[in-house]
Picture: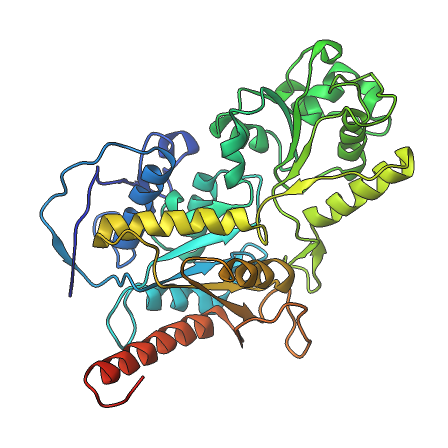
Length: 423
């Protein structure tokens, strides 16, 4: 057994049937399937500890005197990070081996240990709280928002830089809610712009519900300082038209035109995945395809190159944020101020998951080990453009691979220490 200490308030426990975005945002929370509400499951400790650590990463607090240490079987030596779509979930349904993989991480393994884990997904358009409730229902798993890092999570750090911003993508008003939850002060949507001038998009009219939810304002007098694509576009033609109007504008004012097409606001994408794994047998195009299309269209119209910025995987910022979270978790639970020695990242997309993991590993202070599964974008038998450290069939095989590798490392270190073998 390992001795550990916890600081801060114990996260609240909310049932998946009652959890709301507003309720979760009230403070540290663990979302719990109803059957585990009265008796915490094996996943409770990891979910609660990472939720506490996440709040301390994003909202630093003064040091507090830790309570009396208690025993735990959660290792601090290594951790897992998972993509979601194509690894744990496909088409809104859990991949069968994912449920067993989570049980193995939460102690149902031959070594009787628990392994901490987080989720790194390029999927956007929902708050971390909403993703948490969704995954908890899908896997019937206790989980906390603190374990989720979405493609647009690092964008919260830009809320203080820009005042009025356009947020694109997603269903209904969800992306506006995400942005406002991140602290953006004045959030505009394409619906707001169409409501102000319906001629903006000749072939797109707002539905009565969209018209009601869209906010009225005079965009001739509104300076839009930045454009954020938070989730996949539901209407490429309209969204690209509005984005292009702003990119070619004079200082972010709709209805104006810059002489050199270089005065428009910057554009940020929450990720750059060209394809992703959905319920269809074949991969579907994603936000990265919209980015390519927008850049090509801008050049076709203006003759100039458009420079855009992407977050999410494989961009380094996402992995840096994950490392800070795991380091804070390890410090609070094991009093070691460094991240776990190894993080096993399990993904299905070589161009984002594997590439990002490998490139970050080159300069990370710890080891990031890439594992590619065959349940999503990557198809077995093909040669991935970016080579993983290991390729396995399912996420369960990935977890087994990581645990077994760590056992062998520990065994070898023990044999070296006792002099049975040499370095």
